[in-house]
Amino acid sequence: MEHSDNEPLQFGKGNNPSNIMPLKLTLDSKIKFRCYPGVSCFTACCGNIKIILTPYDILQLSRRLNMPPHEFVSEYAEPDFLEQTDMPGVRIKMRADDNRCPFVTKEGCTVYSDRPTACRYYPIGMADFHEGGRKEEDGKEVLGGYDKFYFKVVEKHCKGHLEDKEWTIAEWRADQGVDVRDEMNKEWLRLIMRRKSHGHQASLSEQAQRMFFMASTDLPSFRRFIFESSFLDTYEMDADLVEKIRTDDIELMKFSFVYLAATLFGAQGLRIKEEKVQAKVAEIKQRQDESVLEAIREYEEMKQEQAR
Ligand code: SF4
Ligand code: SF4
Image 1: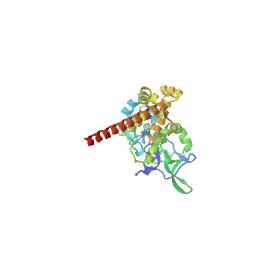
Image 2: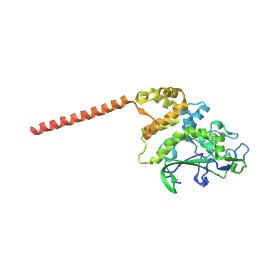
Image 3: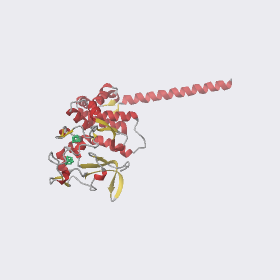
Image 4: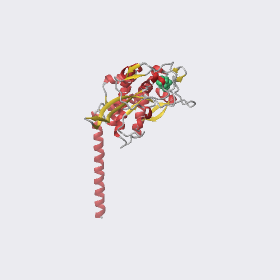
């Protein structure tokens, strides 16, 4: 299925549009589902799929495996573009021999309590129309709205749908720990939605792509960028926040979203220091003065040439 720029972000493990039930669900909608080690298809869904990793997923999994994030990414992930935008991200690299997730065994998921967000969503996906998405207002479709709904993914191999256990979507999400993940991921997903709603009029510069990738996948490098470059001399930063992001990875991750929103989309939240702005203005003025003087010099030389 081709995606247009204003299509919603559909977040979930391997959402194949043909398996999505054409029914908008709310948090109160009821579903029958159960997934447990005794189910006949146990771990059938852990292969041949695309699992995009969010920055929080990478943080949690690299901690779980006791690896620095960049090592985790190079061993267990591979590059992918996010939601058909030019924003670079990563997905779990399936095993070469059987195309299954590197964390799955016969006994189940070996990183279960730290499994990625997309695995927690399955089989309930979320469609998020945000910043430029379409929504209905007074019976008409308008742009720029905000709407969110859920949908069920029913794949033949998944026998969990035949179980009798009943949940509301809200209960299912709480049980899977999706709410916490949503809170951690929301500003990052918002960046992708913004990019999506801007369309492809202008592609992200290579430098912007590199910064987005670094901040999303490698927080220690992003921290070095903050503390070992001219960053703190350039931007107005609250002293308490600086101390928090020095040691707290979650605070650093949240700050990276603010930084990316400001630098990629001009969002509020980060201000350049006044003296830096003034210095830049003075530098531009000096350059302009120099070019004016140069033009006058050239004009005088031309006049003298003509006089001779
Ligand atoms: S991370 Fe765990 S739940 Fe997700 S696909 Fe891999 S094994 Fe399955
Ligand atoms: S019931 Fe569905 S979600 Fe659970 S293991 Fe089977 S295929 Fe995967």
